[in-house]
Length: 422
Image (cartoon, rainbow, N blue to C red):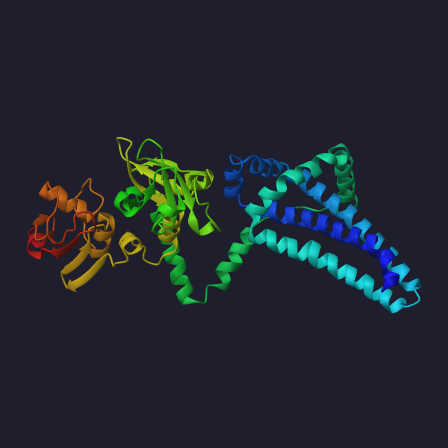
């Protein structure tokens, strides 16, 4: 063992080089694993977060610098490993087999400790690691800025010499869609599901967002500063909604299922601005604007500019991919309509007029109301109470349940005598 003491400085150098290599590997994985939403949040965060966002503005420069430093470090590491292996081979107590074993162990050590482990940790917590590593990484990148044009020139020449006909592959070709349709053509159940999805997509252009939104009574909102101790339960929408400091209007939203951990205080700093749309916009229009502006929450406002509800990207996706989408089932976990007899149904007050007419196969009277609950109160000209009755077109409406600030239950009866007279 005493013969190995002279190798100690070399072994320490190898450990240091592995640490630096792991630093660059973790930085690469953490930064490039960040989602667009994280990048936008970090661009207005702390100094370290702003530094990480700035590095990602020029990904080619960042990746070239990381690969350059990793290459230099690995070359030095394997040079030292070779020196140690040659010295071990010349020692009296050791030989060629021990030297080969040392070289193999050195190879597996740098693979595990400098590649696999750092990148695995970075993928698990990309935002935290990107924040903590951004400042030293920015310094390392700026060091090689003088030789960056040379590196880019070498990369360009190599690409043109080795892959002169290289072209980026398109994300999706029309032929791919055609093949998917051909392969699914023999499955009746899949065809039925595809038809339902296509019909739902078409319907998005006919559904107003106030018909599909979460009403104000169905979501939770917090005024800044928001502390973790004040959050008694998870919001049913899956989003933590932050109001303006001096009003009850929503300003930001935080998607909670993407947060690995929340700070104890000032949670509102993680929020992202929301989109505002009028109540008369369609769900298709909302989806287009949300996709174009990278928003996940739309705040629905009435003609006076007051918030009356929210629409999330998950709500829209459910409207597309559910076989029979229902706001009552989504928000209240109840069936929107239940048959009592041939001509009588118990209907959720939140059920839309459009959907009710389609379900009952009736042409219902024109109305400015969106839901059947709104129709009842419009006909009564007051807040509905249990036992209230009214007629509306070919339907008799009776209020079965009328909680003060919750969804009412309405018994709808088809008036065949009135329908026949008409």
